[in-house]
Image (cartoon, rainbow, N blue to C red; front, side, top):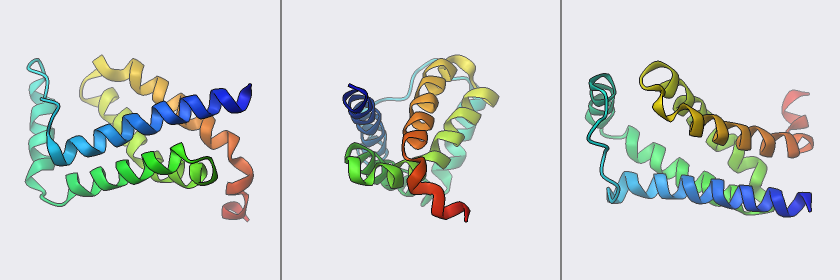
Length: 125
């Protein structure tokens, strides 16, 4: 039962990041109209740096795919972790309206990482 729950959460988490990564290239989800000015300026700054959004998009797509596959889930979680930290920090500092969903996805990622803790052991030796 635990493996099924982990798989379903990993699948949904991975698909969410694949969707977010694809949106960086295809722009099929419009930006909300009520985005705070502070957030609009931050997004404009990221867009000004031409290589950062495609890099984040590639990492989101690849990390999402790796999280879905059980054998590569630990690597995918490591790839997504810095992006998730950035998402949480942006939601704390810039606009707190997305903080509940960011907290849920952070909890899922931390659980995935906890479930893969034996694979991370060599990193800390």
